Image 1 (tube, rainbow, N blue to C red):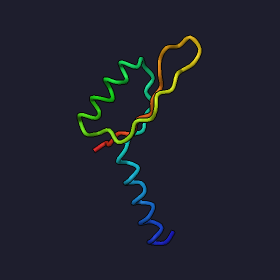
Image 2: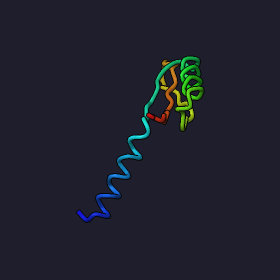
Image 3: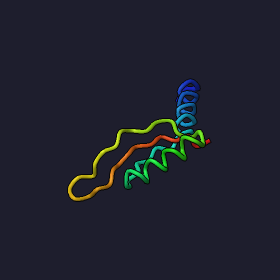
Image 4: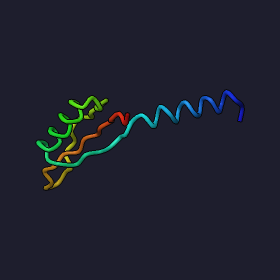
Length: 69
């Protein structure tokens, strides 16, 4: 591995370590509260659209990307 390749790999690892990506499965009101807290703390980077779980399940699923630092 060349020096340039090592530097590029290290930079990519550092960028990836800055974020936590999670799926939240809960009732819409609970998800809204979580998103509000993450937004108020300044950690929220991205919120995906709500997706129904399907069937008789009334919960929703949402993707969140949060800053770790």
